[in-house]
Amino acid sequence: MDLKNKVALVTGGGTGIGRGACLALAAKGSAVVVNYSRSRAEANETAQMIHDAGGRAITIKADVSRDNEVREMVDDIVQQFGTIDVLVNNASITRHIPLFDLEAVTEEIWDELYDVNVKGMFYCARAVAPFMKMNKQGAIVNLGSIAGNTGLGSSLPYAVSKAAVHALTKSLARALAPDIRVNCIAPGAVATRWWEGREEQMMKLAPNLLLQRISTPEDIAAFICATLEQEAITGQIITVDSGQTL
Image (cartoon, rainbow, N blue to C red; front, side):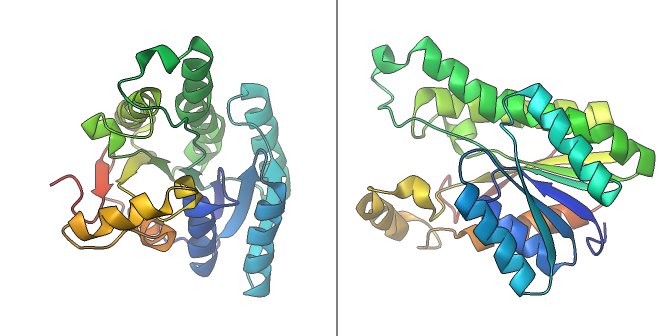
């Protein structure tokens, strides 16, 4: 897929990997919709960075865990741009809970993480699918995690939710073929604000990776674009982790 003049929705686009994806897509010539739920200032800053570079971007607030808000967001985008060609399902949340502390994992935490990380990605994919099918072409990238492969991560519910994202990717790839490709990027450690307060731990990890570096949002964003452009793959979980899981 040639990303030039395509309309791309990036959920959680104000910060981290989401911001990186927005900037990379804009550099490819896409019109970018920066979705946010709470990070309004950061989303506006991302859009302004795109405008300053001569690109096109708007911001839209929507909680992806609420189907009605997702549908309203997609309708708004189609009214403004006519269609949606690309979806980057990036919006995710976590809770930092030691894996052994099972009692700390409440029903509320399970619901919160699944609502955003899994159901939110499904709601967004379902909402954009009719417009992609109308165009006979579309591409979706879900953001998974190596936590979904290894079972290790910031918390047990987070790891399980990302494993569900990997399964969702495969199911959606089957459900939406042949017009819409659905793939998943599973990053390892990435230098984002998720490490806030634990930067020292992140730096200790870097020398133990095969490539001896922590991935940046720009690394992941570049691979997101490459996956969107590659028309011969669907249903794939692609690990980008500097060799962390080897």
